[in-house]
Length: 289
Image (cartoon, rainbow, N blue to C red; front, top):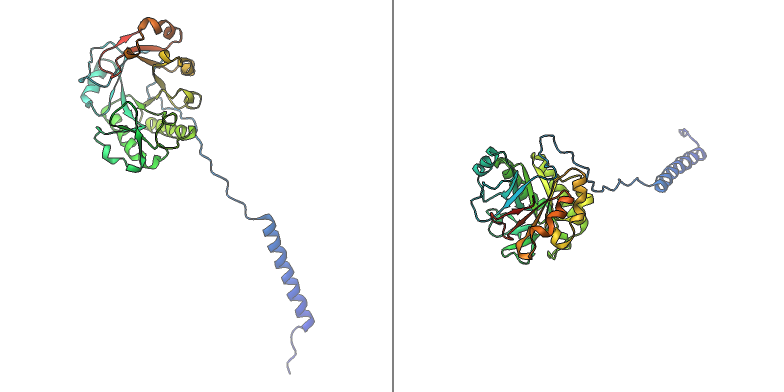
């Protein structure tokens, strides 16, 4: 009979020793746990625009015409703000030939039923009616993945037509009854995304109203455009732009009864350029000296 290599007592000892090592290793791993991956938080690093991006300084003169076309190019203004879809590249070229800069108007926060790309917006991101503006509805700006292809195409068209900058309208949706539970952070995320996309195309971008987010958005936007801020009494919120050397253009409207005498002195003291327009933004303009 062949003798075993190890006695039964020795075999038992080896089994017990190996088992204890395995149990210790498992206990250590369980106690320490598998490190959880760090939570990814959205970050919004400040964008440093390329040197070729035009940034208007405070005091620049401005004309804003979206209706009553064709654009009246005889207005003595350094900058024209006109509609993306309603103007051909030849209009921008003609203004450039006069030494003007030209801004591309688009709505970035609402759906408009007269636009050529209206059918590209998925129904689920179209919200409530925009009160006072027939044919216009709010958009769910949280769903950037669905809005991005449409807005990028619009910005591409702004660039390709030769515009110098973009005015994205309705970028304070979170303060309105849109039909979506939009938050301050939702709006901040969307507006910074817009600024990045504009700068990527060599376009300057203006902060349209949205005065409550000035502190957070100042590093990303190159100028600002306000409406009714003297009539409604909130122009001071835009002063950080002026202090940063960035233009603020205010538009007051005749339908409120306000006149140049009511706001020009204050506008000049604040280094803001202010104009008086009809609400429909036709060619009519009165400008502070």
